[in-house]
Length: 241
Image 1 (cartoon, helix red, strand yellow):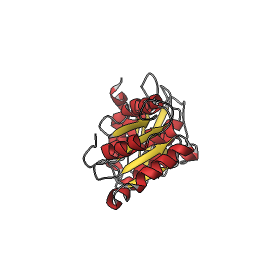
Image 2 (cartoon, one colour; image 1 turned 90 degrees about the vertical axis):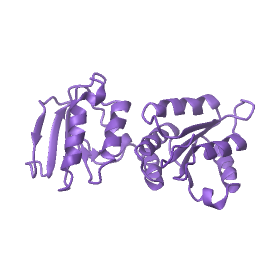
Image 3 (tube, helix red, strand yellow; image 1 turned 180 degrees about the vertical axis):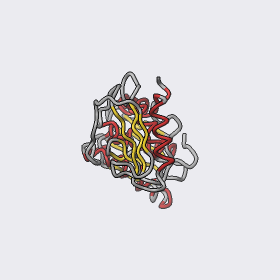
Image 4 (cartoon, one colour; image 1 turned 180 degrees about the horizontal axis):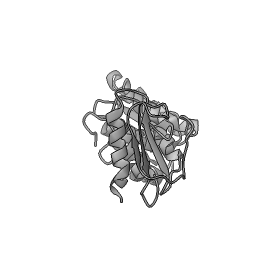
């Protein structure tokens, strides 16, 4: 079911189970976004279905746009055919994204959950093609007491907070998604150990475990509120601790 004001995500796979499993996985991090499985043929065999893809796009579309991720080439062909039959107005807000189905789908789902527009949701999915990308991470694994510095700290950042990760399972998918969703509500750029706080895949690629030092920073003079909010979320254990 479409979520008003949010981009929808459709998973097209040759297997219904794969598509449904991807929705189940992404749903853990994007509970209110419109995530739709369009896997298998109409009668449940391995393959793709024009009707399932078409109805999936319609189900996910709230008017904010739809991102479609596909597993294999013929799935793309089926989706392209489905797009050909859409009204021009609807087709203009549907994007087939060339990205890894799992990583790209999860990143797109989190961006959609955060209320990002179509271009940003597409960009989030495409970020999965870059192997994590972002700026070089630093400090994973170090243990440091929580500390705070104000503006223009010695690190060169305008705003910096340093937090020790308390989550038993480290910064795994769910807390990482919470961090990204919170960061996406702020305009200024914020980094976590040097990587973009708004990129789920970059945050997860840090591999931060319990006890690791998390440096939340911004070079933007207006970034103080974002840094403080993310630091407080991390200190709280993202609701898990």
